[in-house]
Length: 171
Image 1 (cartoon, rainbow, N blue to C red):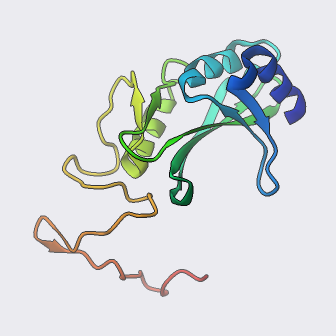
Image 2 (cartoon, helix red, strand yellow):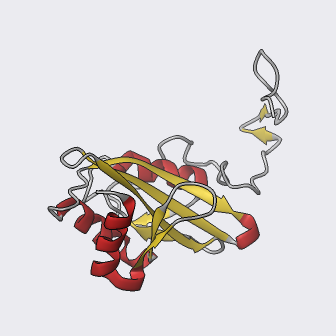
Image 3 (cartoon, rainbow, N blue to C red):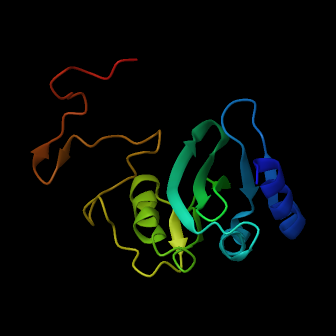
């Protein structure tokens, strides 16, 4: 099934809460209303025509100019050999959150924890919301574009301009 058919199936089931989107640049995705993400994911897994039995990745995205954050779920069906990206957007301020999908795909456990650590997006209903990459007392969310590296952490100086052997990243 191609993206147009997958998108039409989701839009047919969820209406304006699951909108197929084809941007000028980048890959197509289905924009899902935040409050419906767990329900849409469960349908994606259980619907015979879709059978998205694999959650490959969860990615956070920061859009500071638009004052929003996004979470992208990359799904794959081994039965039908098709894929789709679901995307949820939310305001950047306050405490951004959405429902956990660990009950749909247990492998989402660590992916959601990583997204929290790096972007500060909470997953409501997560069975084990502890940090996974950063220490419990870490302040801030390193993959947000406005993140400021502290000068010191537990008495250790942090050099934000340090680059490993080989030099800084090539632009």
